[in-house]
Image (cartoon, rainbow, N blue to C red; front, side, top):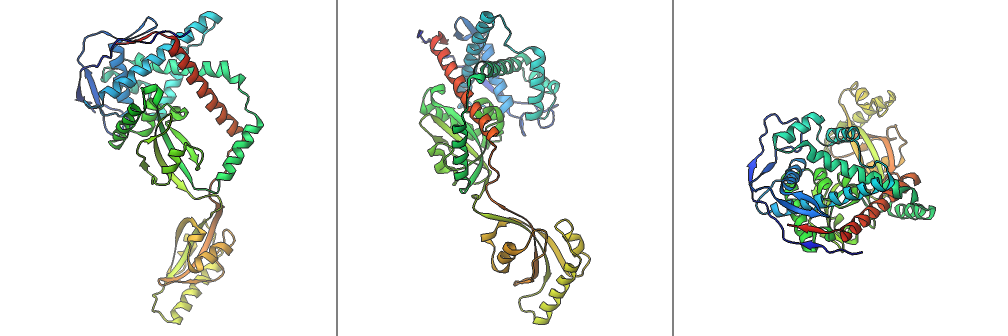
Length: 440
């Protein structure tokens, strides 16, 4: 039965922005630079009511502070409404989840909500992995900024318990067929010849935030925060509605066709290390961070080292022959990729070094022929003359670009995770529709 969604008004906290003191901050905690924090200047009141469960203004300000501290968000008078709205949405969703978990516990006479020891273990892993601090250091930093440890613990408890409940109730019912796995394998195999991008993503859901305009403006604000130093993974964990939020937005390596068409259209224009502009899609807005690019699987890549003797372009043939003779002395020492530099150092005038990995098609002159025809861990058969010297090339590895395709087991786990995420969103959507929610 659909119940009435009551909106009686939105409270906007009056806040002032103060600098976050850095004294005593644990190394690498929260952000590279200390973010700003909000200091509430409001009387205690009610921010929202969810099925008679009250969210106080104190709860709201605590969550706002937690978002700031864990993401590096720099609050201003302009972006405070976005921050408050996100904090309120999180608290409402968590109340709905907790109410549902309590209902199921009572109905089935079981325990679903995680115990304190379980949460201690989860938090220890998270804060050490994300912020490089111990739980005690983390709690101390929260306390220093007026955030109670229960504010963070309750957020983690509900999300961890909800994920466990979803897996327990629906995970065993999910059947990922071999036809689905084979379809993904074929798509990935076909895409292996295309350029690939290692990306992280943030997705702002239109339906969750109240429409496409709000989502787009919110994405712009998050980009501005990250350009000022807010770490992408922390922002993704708190603000993204994508399944990858739990892993800091890490979507791994993707090829054209794996993401929405609007995202595919801009992937190639974003250089490694850059953020995209907001990308509007039918369901929401994406922010993409391209960490690395690589060529398609049909491109041959080779890792090379070289040994060379400097010879000017104007040098006579005798000088070239002398350089070649020195290089043949190096060949006689039977060097490998592991000791080329060491053995080259035993012969005067020879300098050896790493050329790195490159596309064979991008090499010129004798280097391309040498890279294509020289066996691994051996020097090229003949010296290569260039304007700067005489060279021998050593091949230290060859591969096709694109990397290894995931195993069927990895594909199955990914499909299960995606399916569970969709189920969780549908269950939460139904809970919202059935609930009486008053925003004040």
